[in-house]
Image (tube, rainbow, N blue to C red; front, side, top):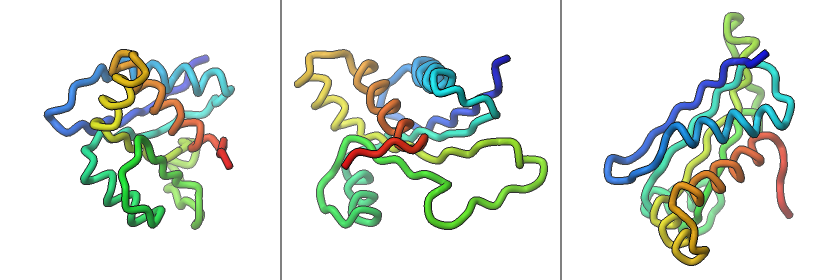
Length: 132
């Protein structure tokens, strides 16, 4: 049985992407990882200035990056109301659109392909996979 997946997508107006493709990719990865409870995740597509601010604030790095993920389970415990107790709130994935354009060009892939790759990379971090 398929469980509801809530994907909230924030995109600055000048950036173009296929929202359905992002939702489908997230649903597919959650299914492949046997996540059965209702899930909530957000995706934000931002510019390099915003990404630099986030990278500085949370990673103490002054440059931009292609993707950041912010788990709601890291650090303090997540407090949920009883009616939301069954919903798994994974967190936020933030992607720099200018970095997507640059990397898509370098890799000779479509922009939507690169966005999907980065969304899935960020989601893997929210699901607990980390690189050294």
